[in-house]
Image (cartoon, rainbow, N blue to C red):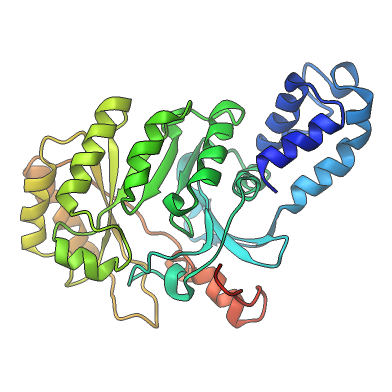
Length: 345
């Protein structure tokens, strides 16, 4: 379901814009419609009140929880396998401190060599309603204060639906604009579109290396922008919005964790308005990439700090449940619990 289709249906039921706003807000914030200062019986037209139970049932059916996989030692974190109405599945992640990572596509066309999600290619786009439904579903589990578009898929390849979802989350979702994070491998359309919307999200750029030739191998179908060009575009957006860019760096043992990369990072990032998030790889049995030793990860952070680069070591959680992006879905497919991949459009 698209958000626009939902709005049209509510209008057909007699909703004025203010009623529309109330229904959408209650859905996104996972609030019962019969609670609050302005209760439906005192506020909504009768035709809409009569239809609310069915509308609520349909909205809750857009995305349903198939399984939850808590992270050992972190009660606030869990990977969620989410079922969609056509039988396809995506993953959402409950993150510490009220964060939520959502998916924007079933599969992905970028084909990052270290990522399970892209192995089957792009299966289909998520609608704006399916993206919002992941937030509503998570809020039925616990509070959500931040939403990052870093799950399955490349948000730039589903730009209209993702931006529609971001706008609604930033207006009716009780989320600050800087707490909505658009993640991309660097599609040029992102840098044109993001500044134009009424809600300007924070930006995360998946970089992974300072070497253009290595990046082309790791991200074979990403736009052919060099790391330096991406950082320059990110810097422009960061200065325009006053939100520092989050540069994502999946750390791969023996590939992008060497002294040469450290020198490249210092040359590229020193003085920039951003933070480098270094994320140790979640190992996948079928892939050749490996997770570096913990001490190597920490030493890299220490060196970068000494060299004047703001870098943070992020926890790539859920190792014990094969929780790397796409792994829960792959496991469910293998066990016959998720839809067979459809032919890409």
